[in-house]
Amino acid sequence: MESSSSALSRLSNLHRHLHPPQSNSKIQEGLLKLSSEVAEALSSGHPVVALESTIISHGMPYPKNLKTAKEVEAIVRENGAVPATVAILDGVPCIGLSTGELERLATLGTKAQKTARRDIAHVVANRGNGATTVSATMFFASMVGIHVFVTGGIGGVHRHGEQTMDISSDLTELGRTPVAVISAGVKSILDIPRTLEYLETQGVCVAAYKTNEFPAFFTERSGCKVHCRVDTPDDCARLIDANLKLKLGSGILIAVPIPKEHSASGGLIESAIQIALREARDKNITGNAETPFLLAKVNELTGGASLASNIALVKNNALVGAKIAVALAQLKE
Ligand code: PSU
Ligand code: MN
Image 1 (spheres, protein in one colour):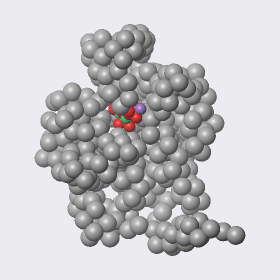
Image 2 (tube, protein in one colour):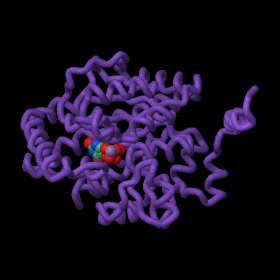
Image 3 (cartoon, helix red, strand yellow):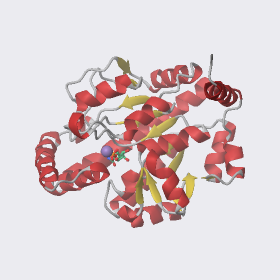
Image 4 (cartoon, helix red, strand yellow):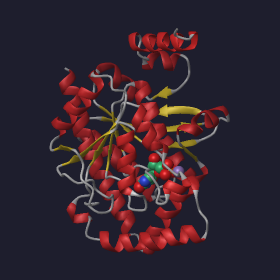
């Protein structure tokens, strides 16, 4: 016989199915704050693109982080969508930041807490300032009905992850949250083949944009093939639409290779990555401190070349992501 708890959980799933969470009710409950621009766009079916904030606080130094964040938002707008940068400010999850709020986050830098899914409740309860990673940003985007999210790179399975079990919660979030994440793949500081294996286990559709190969962030190629290729924003929109209509419940990873003109320094960056990895191991830097450490070290070793590439690929992803959001909104009309 079915236990009462599983019957209850079936009932609550059914309830969620029949009454999907509405952004407005969340605002009334004071759970989170949507900027008026984002709230209006969502209620009128206008395309919206979510953006994460760890890339601002922990991924890039001030003031380039602020300049990049503003430029990325401008690219999204120029291409017909509304940007919704996500962060937790004074304990309030914010979807869509004002210029002042962006500035605050950029100057807080690593004083803002790197906030993955596991950290959300803690940062809110302590009225803290949290910069959301891919997992936390997906969670909030999905909560308010944003289907497209642009970032630079996502977390993955770390090298030797089979021993350390250091697997980014970005991957499990992709398995459980129906948001399409546009990224330039994952960095080779991670174990790319195992990252793809793990995504397969999680039931995540991994699509590569205009290529059959998964990109490796600073370089266009990783040597790993993907099973789904998309060539246009319309292809991506149909994929996202099918995923939503079928209520698969999982996310989609759309991997866009770094533009050719910026991948030239890829070889140099690769060797810096090797040095940074050794240093992290020698200094015993692990856990959620590892990614920021490696990013800063690689930037130092390449004399800023990796940061320039990083900025270029994020902007390219913003361009592609905005076009995908526009194509998706048109499909729904
Ligand atoms: N990869 C990058 N740049 C980043 C990150 C990853 O190339 O800024 C950030 C993202 O916010 C991502 C997070 O969600 O790091 C993953 O951290 P971890 O490996 O601790 O899960
Ligand atoms: Mn980790």
